[in-house]
Length: 507
Image (cartoon, rainbow, N blue to C red):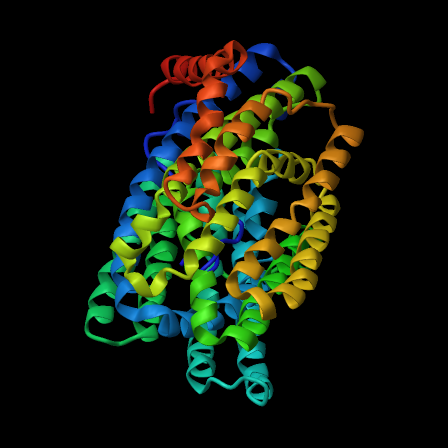
């Protein structure tokens, strides 16, 4: 249950102690080409990233503890009922939000109060319209859905959509100032609220409804806390011109999220048809576990969007930012994923129960895909920060098309493992993103990444190799650390983070 999208991310959070606007203030766009300003922004970004990672690490432990209890009690079928309904609702929420938060973050100067008010009103209108439309369509869809409980869960969840999207103006107001201290307070307490509600209800055998109740409580807390800590007091205001701008931006920006949401319907539709609610549960569990472990990617997305929006067009700095950011992201995502995946054959049955053993294979494949996608997240945020939304949309179409087409062929024969392989086929979309960035913005190199890809990829797929032969998969790790170039890259990355944390002002 991700804060922006039920049981799987929007895509894609957050942290404690970053420099606030009162400490540092947003750097004017005109200073982006100044070396001193760039250095200050890099220190601010790395420092903010460290706090985001720390917040996500703590939040990940809270979520892992809560989800361990809930999933162990519910089992694959009940979890699958909730997850199948939640995937459809997540798509509807993405349509309602329409990239409004990113629209506000991307403004070169601080948005006026009027813009925040209109954005809030716009989201109120779109979210209510989408919720009512989704509720009505559920009755038509009932002819094709064989689980009455899943339909009822869906009809209840659609009315969480307004609460789920109307935090966008308040959180954009906070994030424009790199104020991740407040974001950390909001979201860590939100994690506590989520599991304080869902865990007791799960233990009382409320099944899928424990997750529904927890989600409503969680999103309500996030909305109220965001409004209080941002200082934003939204009023009902309307401007046709601003609404058209929000709609125009949302249509291009959020299109990739909508397409991703449509692609995610492969899980309840294809996996559900051939493997039932339990199959949906296995895939959703694997996605949830990967998302929890790869906590760094959510912080990188939001922080990268803010910082890339403030970097100028100096190609050397863009190149350095992309290459350094790619290494940081690859290691921040890859190391925890590799540690868990290598031990998944023991972790999953011990923590979650032996009923979840079929999910290990799809978890390992999804972990590898997430790891290999990690560097591309920086390129994607660069495109969004430049208003180049359509290449991301095109890449999403390519990736989701590959998943859907391949899953239809593989899932009937290989079950949930077939879905994992289908997801791996979507990596072809990364080639398109790289091509666009290199051709239209700046040329960069992945040369420094390959030793770490070579090292961590075999460890991530260890669940497919029986013991003790799986230990052979550790050989690349030994070889890589024996190479001076790899040790130098690690040392450089460590020095970059350490110096940025030491030099950045304290908030």
